Length: 498
Image 1 (cartoon, helix red, strand yellow):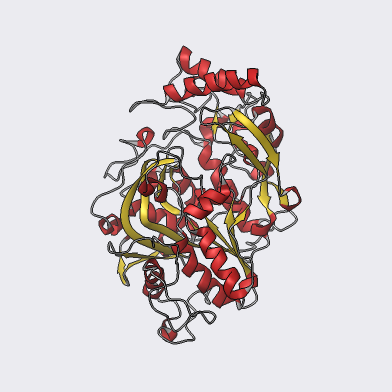
Image 2: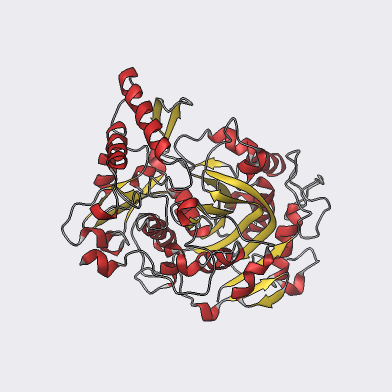
């Protein structure tokens, strides 16, 4: 039975000094810690658990174990924050905090997970950021490095942050590719959803399917997706866990609407060239890269295809920079849409939901079990959320919110309401609640309990938590906002097959 607990305190801020211990010792601290810090966010995470009624009888005692209902002693836990990419030179601190999970939220989640498992050696955290991300920089700026260093000093255990990427690239500010290297190859588990992939309907009418992911060789992605074959490269550390705890941002997403727990599972994918973000071209050519095709849009798409196959040489980078400049120019302005950044993207939600299902059912050898293999809890960091052009270029929005949920699908459903979005207008969420093989959830909306500061509410009132809703990405404006009328989702599978 899914439970979602929402707490809000606008006086809470991320600690500025990297000290993520709470301002006062709590009786349930998982191991002796002398340090007392300035992390007021810690108390908000703690309150989200208390308001959920977690281990209610023991609250306020040394024996309080709020995650013990879901995590057993001796089990393994992997904590999956959202570290999308490092801070840009011209990016404000607020905007950076609006796109990346903060360590002050991960720290209490880590503490309570350690308490539930019985030891720091049973818990790890990290993610696979963008291939171009300077992981050391983003880990430092988000406070993740400080959390890892604290745990190392207190317990002797390396809990993270762990870089799960299989491919890392270096780029100039102008878009020239300097270097590409592979890592963690021995930790990659290939999982093939086959005909059960939500991408499979694209391949059933015999037409050519051109799925794409920006900055990756499109010839590579064709190796992993085809009729009856849909392969994802998952990092082994995530699959070895008995419980995954997602700690995403409360953030908008230009391709799928919002990027909370379900979309955040992409952080478990070690190689991004296995991901389908959009289909080349416009709807008139069986694509969803942009709403309507023009000569210049089609040219930019063709150039993007070409530059993704080039080397790191000077001539290649001249073409690459010119192609990126054209693509960027077409994305400017209130109606500039490229790369599937709109509500008609019928590809990215399928990919993300595929991954959420894999994380629930995949064994460590890459095969799919008939029954769920691990649990999936969620803590959404909305102390500062991200609105507008997320996930990479959001505007930071102080919201003072932490959301705890026991089911990723229904937590996202509630989170959409919180920011003023209609979950029925977001295919990623709406389709996640429907019947399918390897379902992402076994629950229905009738099973959902929503509490705000311990008070049960109707989910339709969750938007009242904030003073006003988040600004959607430009490709979703006028589509995703809560309203009273019916919605017609982008093409369904029957239309694809027709």
